[in-house]
Length: 113
Length: 112
Image 1: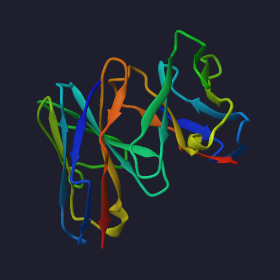
Image 2: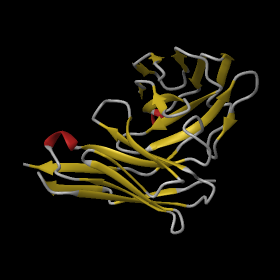
Image 3: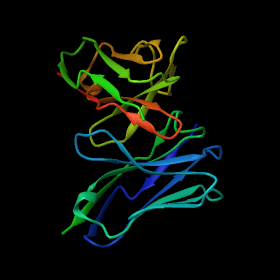
Image 4: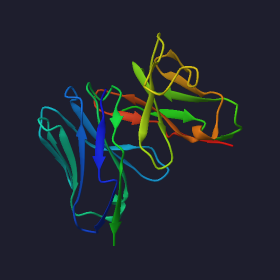
């Protein structure tokens, strides 16, 4: 089955700087890669996703890149703000968003004022 | 989109007892998923619940411990049986639409 690895486990950046979180996956059949943000005590919320037919996707300060050959995908947050502090999870699934999703281990992002 | 109502939101249970968690979706979905999130950890898939058939369990999870029901396309239950303190976790149900997966608000279970 699918295995998703995520690094780093914790990340602290200065407000205004960029943050990068990296993930690898094992199942070459995976073709949908969502990223979730989870604030303390709340459910995971989708922030961006990418499908295997594109290499990059951007939404305002958030971007995701995908390298299918290397089975790597990354989340980039630019101009970080205090409200970006949360736990971020990458995930992968071999079918679609309606299928079971396998999560990475999570990255706790802290934004220093 | 999909709106998921999950209950109870939290409970404190005695060891050896069982708790049933309910998940109601506002639209019909083929598959529903149950996850466990232990304190400070990621989400681990317990099982996939299909309407009209037995649930499919992931490695490390068994039906006797986590029986699941799926009586129709909008509802599912997960029971945590014969609980021990190690079962203290947040349990979340999830459904997927064509574009996105959605999560219930979770059930915070504490076993004492």
